[in-house]
Length: 86
Image (cartoon, rainbow, N blue to C red):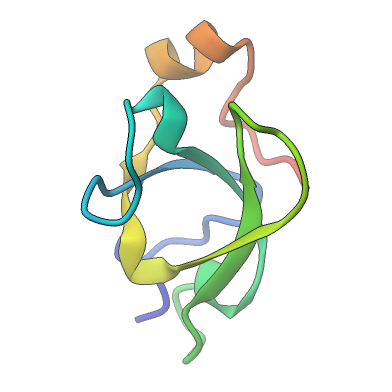
């Protein structure tokens, strides 16, 4: 399994598990841009993207670090949506 949600997370905003990233939920929201870990049917687990509060550059995470998809309320607070964006 490429990520802990077992879905295609390409372009989606996820919340990184607090075991792997410090801070509030807002600080752990991550937009997945690509990598083998985005797709549930690949053997790789690396995902690149960016943290929404920083919004700069590409950062790498592993698929197992994903706790869940960000919910609508969390997305509204940052002025974004969970509609796939690449």
